Image 1 (cartoon, rainbow, N blue to C red):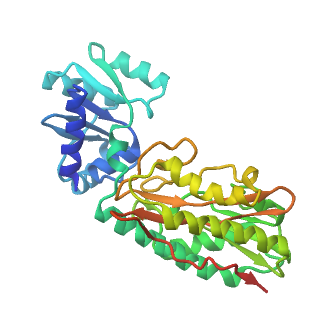
Image 2: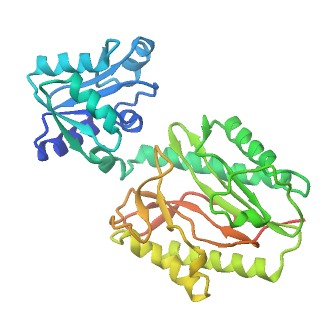
Image 3: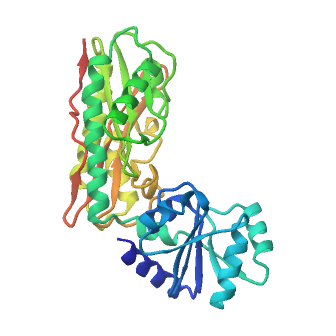
Length: 357
């Protein structure tokens, strides 16, 4: 797994005439090396691949980064980088501009005096955007755990319980199922708060005859899942049924028509067109979805500005919603992988309107 990724990165570097690349982003470090420690740098040249880390990880790092030379860096890591570059005869170093702040850039520039620093933008992210079979299998496991979690939480949904209590139960169940953490801060939003697209769980007490929106995911073996389901506690009104039905139709239409070769903007418009048909376009203000992998939000984006062309192996969310201030909101979200002919859905929780008595 590591060697093909190194070879692909070197090809990208060669095309940009980069002698070496310093990887500082923690997710990119994990992607390239398999190393899951909390600190370290990756230094890639055209014929060397090194993982620099500290004393704490000198046993762990060689076990995980099996195709890398593991180097224990000094108290000032850039001193070690400078020595290595000098030994390799390299005077031009690429760095990850999305990860390095201006202050860090000035510090690195000062410590690597005499080395030309070249900003790079998303080299490793280009590799991460298309998942391999192993990655897709792990994301499927994370999605399966999310599905089991949604089934589990339904027996806890009742009048008088708080949103934070439900969020805690969701997260405990995922951890018992093997997750090391939630993919992101769990969203449980009830009643009028369900109109908040990112309404993180609060102390609000659930009441009858209202929406309860759950948006959560399992961070499992280093990869994220992300699912949203909206239920009604008590008796749904005609408005509840109308809004839910429109969102369900919009998502179903998008899932039926998303395919490789389509741009993210086109995928977004599939769902937006349905919602607009019913007069609710102004109440669907976010993108249809986003890439999913080591991070909860990755490329590509299914949005009005998402110009990436969808390719087989990309894993994305599909999550249309309608949010009515003062009333409530609905979002339905699934994780999918783009295939050669269309898509495969990874999350399988029911999308019927679930009514909790």
